Image (cartoon, rainbow, N blue to C red; front, side, top):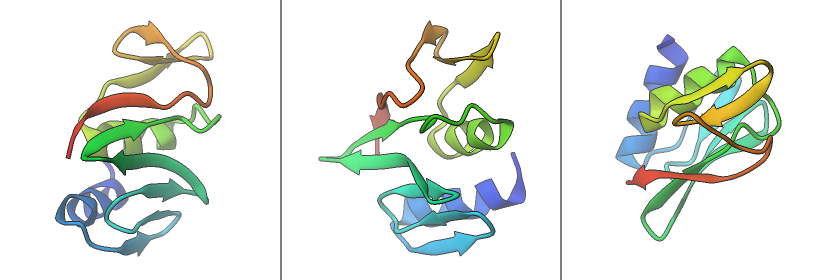
Length: 94
């Protein structure tokens, strides 16, 4: 996990706002390069690649949510199930 991911994770879990490099949180949602990749709705956490299956996006999603996002043959997956490029998936509760 990168330092940026760890710093944003701590702020997000505490419900605080923070910006580090290309990643921002308001304590509820997380944005990477201006794309919302994590959101909380009614205490439930949802995440998406937001169309970008990069290692950086994977690092943020996995490091902040403890999820298992990855790509295989240029296709995005969550917990070994194929997901759409911009699909929001339930990853747990906050």
